[in-house]
Figure 1 (cartoon, rainbow, N blue to C red):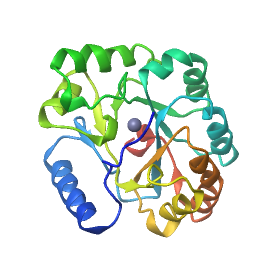
Figure 2: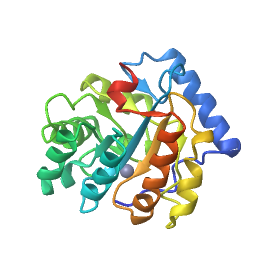
Figure 3: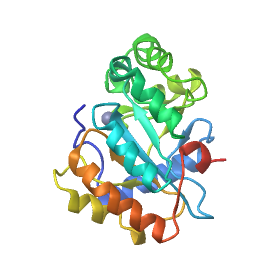
Figure 4: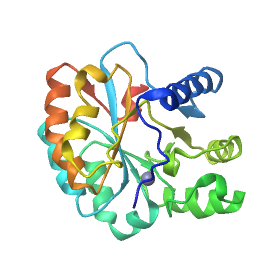
Length: 225
Ligand SMILES: [Zn+2]
């Protein structure tokens, strides 16, 4: 599933504005509705992978297993229907799953029923019980209306605080640098993508350095536990 340049950059004024807005939203909205950052005390960090499952998923899982790292996979419903065995494997290896919609549509563009039944309920039905709490809207796109629709359907919306930028490149090096341990703060929710060989190539070094520097790589559930 192609990712979009609509994701915000990690640095610069746009990112500072985004962080300020998210900080404000995080302060006024209950965490049952919306999260973008975990607790800042401790060493926990949540890596998240959007847009799977797909052929490369087992290779991602192998790297995570090598470092005993846990992550959260925001999966696309129509790909879960194609690869139910990968959904089971992600769960069996101790990772968390979340919904990324059924068709990877922009949630704000959908009528209420299209969002609820077409995207949220159809995808939830393909996720293991116990993995139907989190949703990441495709492209990080949301409005008050789509956010409330997700909440009414029982989902907490998860954005991110740390953008790997792995959808803007086709090379592993910039991804490695973007997730260097000194840039990843405690409680960070890190945005990464499945199905990209350059992200997969960067992953071993990212995990090696993050674990070496004492970051505790956990699922979104464990981040907020
Ligand atoms: Zn996506």
